[in-house]
Amino acid sequence: MSASQNEGQRSDATISLGGRTATLPVLSGTLGPDVVDIRKLPADMGVFTYDPGYGETASCSSKITFIDGDKGVLLHRGYPIAQLAEHASYEEVIYLLLNGELPNKGDFETFSNTLTNHTLLHEQIRNFFNGFRRDAHPMAILCGTVGALSAFYPDANDIAIKANRELAAMRLIAKIPTIAAWAYKYTQGEAFIYPRNDLNYAENLLAMMFARESEPYKVNPVLARAMNRILILHADHEQNASTSTVRMAGSTGANPFACISAGIAALWGPAHGGANEAVLKMLAAIGSKENIPDFIAKVKDKTSGVKLMGFGHRVYKNFDPRAKIMQKTCHEVLGELGIKDDPLLDLAIELEKIAINDDYFVQRKLYPNVDFYSGIILKAMGIPTSMFTVLFAVARTTGWVSQWKEMIEEPGQRISRPRQLYTGAAQRDFVAVDKR
Image (cartoon, rainbow, N blue to C red; front, side, top):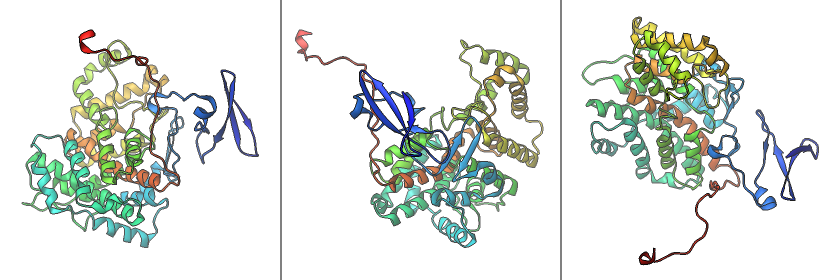
């Protein structure tokens, strides 16, 4: 395949195969590599492309998030993630992802009030929780309850109406912390705590999880700031597995509650949203600092099957830009809580120190990622590992909803329909059972 310039700034790619030639346009985005538009390839050449996992395929165009994995860059609507995590509230990031720009003071106040007014759940939704076993995984409760919201808000089914899309977006983002907190309370056998209008998004989430009706509860500002950062750092991450799932479900015209429920299901996988939980399991398996050298040796042995969790990333081939912020937050939380001699923390710090100085990991650019630190922070805050992915889903709902809205509002949007490389039996005739 060769590339050439044509019509000024437009470039074309030429592919030749079996005596046939096709000219394919090359498209350029604001940032990032160019992409070859292959939509006419089957008609012109009689072939499809083969890309298992879509790792080298742009499945859509988007204005929301940009990632440069080689340089460790993550931008939301053009703003670096470090600036947002350090200076913005999560509500500002919600507005930014949904609308494309940061709000002014008046817009922010109106938006925040609207968001707050949608945090309550329909009282009949309480009955859903009683249908789950007490030992049900909180992700199962979250997935089922979010999907069931469509039964309470049928107006969301008519997604052709902009007002319906806007209302559904606000309902989803506002209500999912309440559902998540109630899922936690249910598994703990504690009374549900209702959201408070005097608290912001991160504060409300903490209060609904940890407050009890029998005593007053004051949100710790350091923990609230940490939760605000965790939410921002997980708000969106381009076309990952769960976001692609939301877009694919949404392309069928399904209601937004069903689409987000599908995203939650995809996030549930340990290779996606369960990575920070896997970090703690890995640390527990190592046991003590004395066992780290033996563990590192097993990681380097490809036949051992032992993996170093929380290091490296599918997209980032350099450092994860979110990890540095999370590392700082980790020390702030541990300092606030007075945790100095936690064996798991000591083990994590020692493992990090060894890994970032070992040539084996340095050459392979296996740096600590956001999951390595977030699991430690959440554990220190008293949040059980079963809730880690749930909180990830709470944060990522903003990105999912933003991506869903962008897709629905795109002119000429089509249903997703990947093709395949068929490797099964060729056509054959049916033989009756008594003659087989």
